[in-house]
Length: 511
Ligand code: FAD
Ligand code: DLZ
Image (cartoon, rainbow, N blue to C red; front, side, top):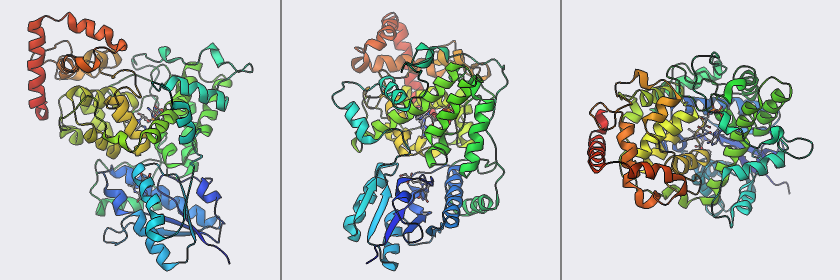
């Protein structure tokens, strides 16, 4: 008897070679894709993120059909009874005889749990395959991590360099004699060389239809006008080539810069394409390495970029699957403050935060240093409840899926895991923001002031953060210098800092 298999392809599994598509027989087995209310509503996603996912799903489904797959596509209908993956699969299995369900390991624990429950609720075996679009697997990460006191990206990254051979010489040594050129990647940008910008695509008919659907039915976050993401693998590849040609050479030098008037500077805006499967991490890294071998870009740029992908991206995913589901509830520093409302509106007089949120609202994007040292740093210093800031990051970026958002936010930004991911909190005062960019020159607050009414709120909050958390952080060897500076503060200055920080917390909505 012929067995029929059903595979579900989720909105972030849009890769023709994904494991679950390799495991089925084209033309005989069924592919199910669904635009679902539950997935649209579990956080208040940016409307551009929803358009990107729906349009890329529709383009992908069409391609699968053209290549002989039997695709069952469920279009978004807010009134439909089918709201979740489980509803969609159950409805499909009611109408068709399905003997087995095959899925690729999903990107969020919530969905992983839902897929695992299908077997019990439907009485049909579910086979979950590793997502081989990553360089490493959760199993390999666990093997590497188990028994280590702390997990550091740098060591995992070296393993990935050796594994992939990227930027390795013939003797098996790192090119340039060094694994990491991070120290060369911290220049302030002063308007030269001219900023690059990501490749922009005019919406085609499918995208225009999705934009109208989202406009009329979905109350999401952010601005819908100006949607210009690519929605097919071909467009994503053109974006990669464009970045390699126009942005990569300066990526390394200005990776940490915080310019007031540039939303992308030399960042690639490839994360959303990578995360929904339009690009693979190795094809991206190989293009970057080739540009260096062809002498088109310096080594600090190529290494810096490759490190983000096979280092940070893989490491972050490893942490997520190693630590979930408990990871999401961790709150090592006991943050208990509400997230300010202006994280959603951008209406704050603090220029750096205003610009980062404006970029976020307009583009479903902010670059890494805006996420880490501006919106993230402020939430850390204020003492926001980690779950609230994690939900914000998961909602507002086109590239946000929990496997990558959560460790970055809870671990890297909020130190909520107590140092599992980062050896110390990335806490910084206004001075850092001033050093890395020119927001402060355009700000209504004075970066040079600590406790006055017009003083930059990052300043008082920074010193207050150190004082409040001294019991938990004071013994951290990487924070010794910071605590030595706290010791030097006169009692009256400490009292003034506490007073100003308390005022900021009580009046945060008015900042
Ligand atoms: P580029 O600066 O051009 O970097 C190149 C690529 O490296 C990115 O496309 C991305 O794939 C990868 N990368 C760089 N840093 C990281 C990192 N820390 N973790 C994982 N991958 C990385 N990235 C996401 O993809 N999704 C998220 O939901 C997400 N949430 C974040 C939340 C916070 C609080 C912070 C601090 C960082 C977060 N990041 C996230 C990481 C990083 O900020 C984004 O990947 C990057 O800004 C995307 O823009 P880009 O493609 O222009 O990146
Ligand atoms: C983020 C998202 C949204 C908004 N909508 C859908 C959808 O309708 N259908 C779908 O298959 N996936 C969607 N996604 C992605 C999922 O919410 C989830 O992030 C991934 O499946 C990872 O587990």
